[in-house]
Picture (tube, rainbow, N blue to C red):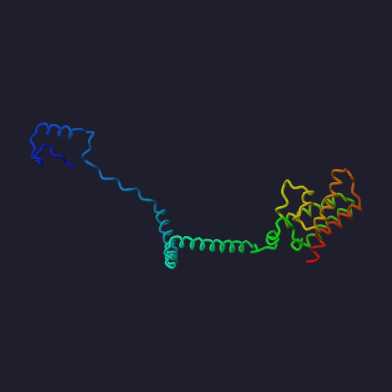
Amino acid sequence: MAVPSGLELSGVSDPRFAAAHHALVSDNAVQFDLQKALPPPQPPQWLSTLGHWVEDILKPIGRFFEWLTNFMPNAPVARLLLWLVIIAIVSAALWLIINRLRGKPLWSKRAHAQHDEPGVANESDWVPDRNAAIDWLAEADQLAANGAFAEAIHHLLYRSIEDIEHRRPELVRPASTSRNLAAASAIPSEARAGFGQIVALVECSLFAAKSVNEADWVTARDAYHDFAIARAWQV
């Protein structure tokens, strides 16, 4: 910005004013010529393209919500409540769709059992896999036929725990013991009694230093039959 050296524009001839004006103009600390501001940096092309793409996608959604809002009352509280109901319905629908895609039933027998009486087993819900139980028993029979009665009983115990973990996954934890599982009310009474007999025989062989014989094996086998196979034959 050009500043006149004299006072022609003001028509004032006061030498003191002229001196002060000259001193002000001569001061380098005062800027009279202002530079134009630099334009802001432009975003990269890929970011602009992405922004336009997102905008094109969201526009129909925005128009849909705007159309939906036109049917709502003008009261802000009523609109808020209606939106909360819509969000809840959409969330429930998404949850059902995801569960179906994952192959989960909408309402399982176990959920009904836990809803009716939490922590207590539903006898009709305990249905082990009959074929798997027969295979496990055949493996144990082979061990017993070779005279390895303790190993055969251990085999039944391990397989029983696997079946409990499959049917009641919340019961089996790293710190769980066989005795804890044998006392769990979430296991049906018939299966719990058979499992308890197997646990008792294993504890005798491990902690009481008592060797198990064929009679003990027969007892464990019958107990496993009560635990799994007898129930499976009723399916």
